[in-house]
Every structure is written in structure tokens, then in C-alpha cells.
Length: 157
Image (cartoon, rainbow, N blue to C red):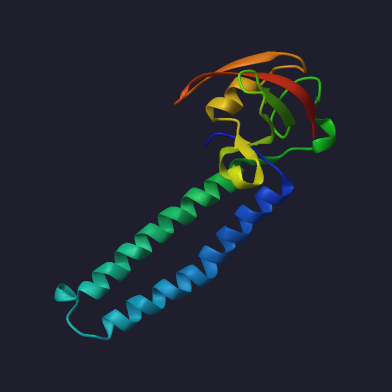
């Protein structure tokens, strides 16, 4: 049994859509490639057939992985999130103590992380460093560029 991961409803719906797409269109496309390669003759020396079978194996592995992720996924009820401290799905406003720069991030599961959308993984160094902190707390976080100190300005959802 895999590890339970928590998602927003949108994040889980996106995973389910991707899984469905792979199972239907993905499998159909691979089957066509295998049929076309098989029609070209001798399978023992048919590189296209070998490549299509490899692609099929990769697709099935991806489907199996996604099925496990979806099977172990839990949707987080946003109304039950405790905003007194930083947790998954918290929206956190932080201030870099050194240069005063202010950032706002939402903490999400690793699969939903998207820096362009200001969503960082709870598994990332910054995400791990912020978890459990309260407003006014200071988080010292070890990053690849060295230690950075952030003040927790605000916590919301």
C-alpha cells in the first residue's frame, strides 16, 4: 500500500482526468502503433514494433502509478483547516528577514506544486520549514543557496 497524499478537489480531479486519458486514448494510440508495426512484417527484426511495445510498457507503468496515487489520495476539507498554524493547503504570507521581500504561497502536495501559481510542495525545503509555524514566528530554512530566515506574516486558506 502506498503513502496517503492529500489533495485539493481540483488537484485530484486533474489526476483522475489524466488517468482516464491514459487508459482510453493512450492505450488506443499504442494499440494502433503496435498494429501498424506488426503489419510491416518480420517481428524479430522490426524496430518499430519493439519501440511500440516499449512505449506500451511505459504507458502501463504510468497508469499503474497513477492508479496507486489516486487510490491513496484524500481530498482535504478546506473548512477543517486550522489557520492558527501552517499546514497543507494553508496560504502563507512570508517576509524574507534579510531583504524584506514578501511572498505568498499555498502549501500543497508534491504533485500539485506549481511555482508559477505560487503553490509550493510541503516536501520542499521552504514548505517543510514553514509547517507548524504560527503568525509572527520566524522560520530558518536551509536552501541550496544557504540559510534564509522568513517571518510568518499571515496564515489563511
